[in-house]
Length: 257
Ligand SMILES: Nc1ncnc2c1ncn2[C@@H]1O[C@H](COP(=O)(O)OP(=O)(O)OP(=O)(O)O)[C@@H](O)[C@H]1O
Image 1 (cartoon, protein in one colour):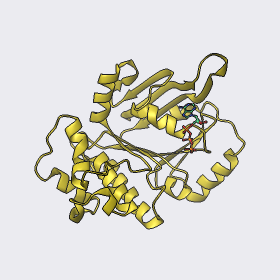
Image 2 (image 1 turned 90 degrees about the vertical axis):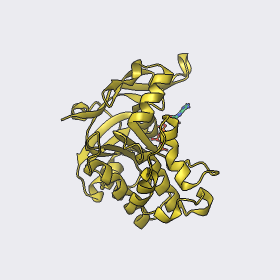
Image 3 (image 1 turned 60 degrees about the vertical axis):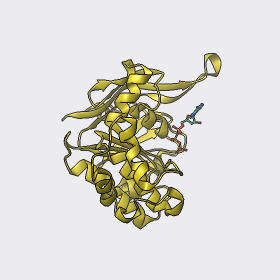
Image 4 (image 1 turned 135 degrees about the vertical axis):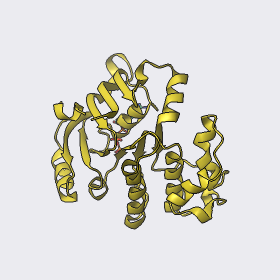
């Protein structure tokens, strides 16, 4: 199956010498095109670090990240940023919208940063897809938390990225709003765009949210500690409970695409 993202022996260390701490890896993981993966693990297990390294927002200390066919570990800062803007979208728990811009302007931002002028109707369609067609002129402060997160999703989707990364995207939302947002994300992996099917990699703490994905990858102490396919929320919760004191280990199947 075609791969969207591959991590080969990726690790992240902070500090140097005796005070160096490895917070991630070595991790081998592969995410295929058209797949929806949730990443779970105890607090501090390295989930956000993994996502940031996979998305090219952070640089691994060692290893290789191949993102949408390009080895981003070998790129300099400028080229990596350009590739990231083209190939990925990122949704954060804290929305990260610019408060002085309207919903419409926030959504247009990734296109403008990529030097593109949004086509007529493009932003409006992005707003429609997340059910906010009537809020184009609203600023983030005038929107509810759920609406702000949906603007953030629309902004991440507007470039039809090959891979959408989401870090706790439903963390601040109630269950019903969270479900709508998960449907927005699923749309990316089920509806082919010009570049084919998208791919979603999402960090979550919530077994109900994780069970929405096709695959759940578990991290413990910065290492892959197993995975489940199309699990029920109860199975995810049970695995999380078991992970409490467990250490991660090398899981060969997680590296396969
Ligand atoms: N800049 C940094 N300097 C030093 N240590 C860091 C830095 N950033 C993260 N860490 C450490 O790396 C480890 C992994 O952090 P990360 O945020 O990836 O975990 P997480 O699984 O996403 O946690 P949470 O679920 O609590 O958000 C933590 O122990 C954290 O303290």
